[in-house]
Image 1 (cartoon, helix red, strand yellow):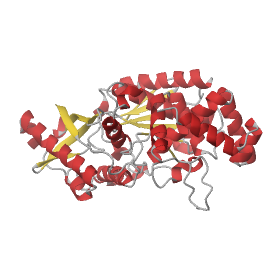
Image 2: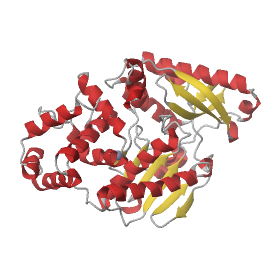
Image 3: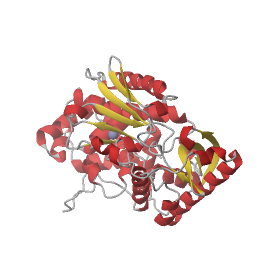
Image 4: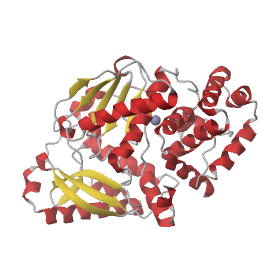
Length: 411
Ligand SMILES: [Zn+2]
């Protein structure tokens, strides 16, 4: 399946959307202040009836124009242009769009891609919202909500009030929170969560006994203090938020882009498996290897099984960007895979490197048992070099060069 990336153009376009910057998830270290949700809607919205009166051709022309401006803003690093096509009245939404833009512009890929979007179809929803299905120059798809504000069709999402009241559904292993706005996909996503659990049990040998609280969120605004670069999250804090997984639904900006070969549900299945792996890691395996961020995120990627993801780290290394296992400089904020969450740039890319390190270790050092040995040795010694000696009897330099050699063959 790597053939989809063979031509250079597809690489940069796909990279541009991949590093735009979506990551599979980020584990939260502090509880989101969900009680602030009600303060987010401060400005009354424009009359929603306008949009439904416009003809489809007119709506499509308006949305295409906004997509063109959005692409131009990315290509030319023009935040002011970006602001013109974002719903300025929806404050949390405005923050997430801007944050993703800023992350991209400081990444290694800034300036390397030519963003272009082609509108494919529209689907009118309630309250004047229109879901636009479009394609990127790299062949990826997305379905984002727009609404008309004045003369412009702006990228947006419904408000907390508009998505409807939360509904809680309990099953054997899950407590799902859903919103009526996404009822067209909620049952399917709930089924996919069961599949994620079965997949985790198959690969890791065990799955958590505890129930997972799964929030299926059609908008970012429901948890407006979540990290803005994540398309899903696992919260391993205690108390009320324990065992909480939050995922965004496909028809949202927060969900981002998907590979049409996998369809939205194929990509989402991998994301759900990724998140549930975090919960298994915490509840069944006591977060072994907790000092190494790459062990947690790499394991989640490994179990999710998207091997194409290894391509990005390989390609990046071959063009001169390597995120090292250990940053051996004197820097206080280490720029390495042990400290992924502290990376000042290329955080999204670091998931591919972490994935590669776990897969390399599993394939060359005794399967998942070898991986767990290394994780426990790290917990015992608190030092990755000592852990390698204890688990595999190998020097860091050798492990590091073997890994890089292996990674070089993945693209
Ligand atoms: Zn994750």
